[in-house]
Length: 290
Image (tube, rainbow, N blue to C red; front, side, top):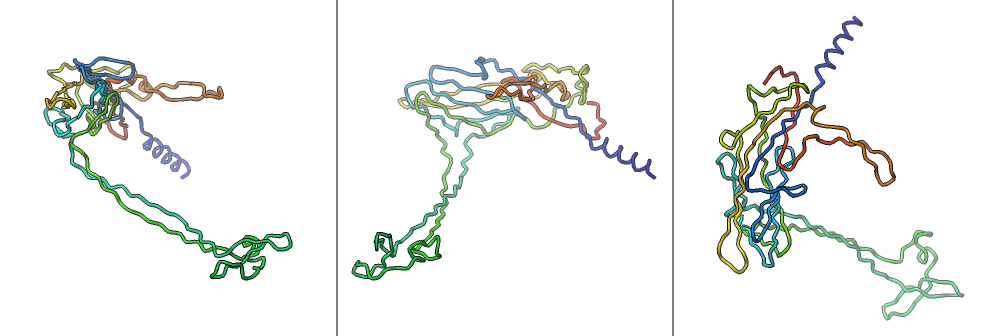
């Protein structure tokens, strides 16, 4: 019976173990340049920055106005497009924000005086003159249990609602961030792509813009303050490579020193880049090969 229990425990322990894997996708965009930790598009008036690295892929962008005039981004004419399907950036949402306030108002009902060189509390009559000497329970309420004031507490709350504007103004030499959509959230499966590879079995799949499983783009429409003419930016991306990695390959241990020169252990992605993104998944009793 003891051996049966131990065997059952081992089976349950093994079945509860999950091996973690990462699917890493690399993208390509022909009209973007690279700068430090970002990809960017640039014209005479603005720079549009991208950093896709996140789980599911961050399709958002930072719009930097490098001109001396205010730029107006028209969200009603701006779209995220994935595999030919357009998604609006102007969502016409209404947000509610709760605002609360609380305050106390302490109203004194007495006046301080002195008797025999000691402070005492004089009750105040209607004419404002001291009428009598108060006892110590009124003089020192913290010690003798009395009080010399009435305190009123008031709390108010309100709700402020505001709607999204279809036109977003960006002042000169400032930036605003726009983010609504992920690139994809479902694993790409293929007969030439092992789902649970070992380190030696990792084989990336390559794609062109013509056969890529996922193409996406941002269409951004803006205008300048002194001109009614719309200017449209289109940044077209496609996935050029997909590979599945076991956790031991995807993540590495890194040591760094803090301000007190203590060694701190951190875990970093080995394949992180601004033109890549990833999906995390686990092998949980799944016998699928691809």
